[in-house]
Amino acid sequence: METEKSQESRRLLASVKEKYNDPDELELRLEELKIGLREEERNFVEKYPAGGRLLDIGCATGRLCFALARLGYIVTGIDVAKKQIEQALRIAEKKRINAVFRQYEMPTLPLSDASFAAAFMGNVYCYVPHRASRIAFLEEIARVLYPDGEVLMSQTVLDSVLKNYDEVYDANHHRFAFEYDTLEEGDGFALGAPHYLHFFFADDLIAELEASPFDVANPVLLDEKLTCVLRKQST
Figure 1 (cartoon, rainbow, N blue to C red):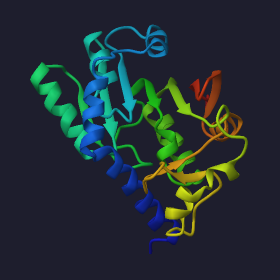
Figure 2: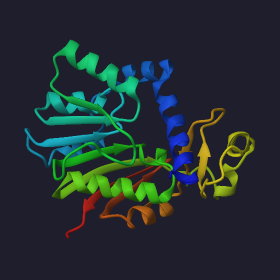
Figure 3: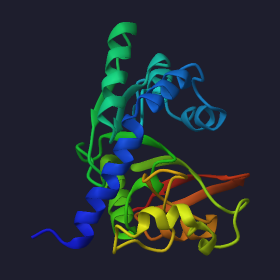
């Protein structure tokens, strides 16, 4: 029988899908295609030779996947939002870019063990409801990476904006939080919308990542974003 926490996790994740399936969000991701690789992504991928197998977790409409595919990498992009994946597939077909796109359900990855040399995960971790599921998600990512696999991760954090989690629990939060009984510290909702996300301070995020099968390397906190490399631990 499904527990209350798993039922609420499903509802919270449905709110994330709703956000990213929205037409305005789809249009925004089309505009992002013009960006190509960001500097930190380019620096990270340079260590991997063309032909390597790479995974983009939370690929949306495929900005990063298309940029990597043009450099000769074998790329798979996954996203929880079905319409983002459909849009990426249409673009890939139109532009004749060889990349694989798949919709998935957090925290499970529909991918084989040890399939990828490296992965990218930008502002995705905050959308996995509940800490235990986030750790399970990291375990899944570790499973699909090579033994020496790494993840380039970036995540928006609160450090330059707020002083503590209590400041997250404003009127907007209470407008939607009353519908849930299993929310944890840091759980919240996008401003003016019922779309779930988990808020982090950098130290708390790093501590949570270190409870996973990864070591955290090269953390850089710049403005509202923490970027780091997750290195798969030896077993």
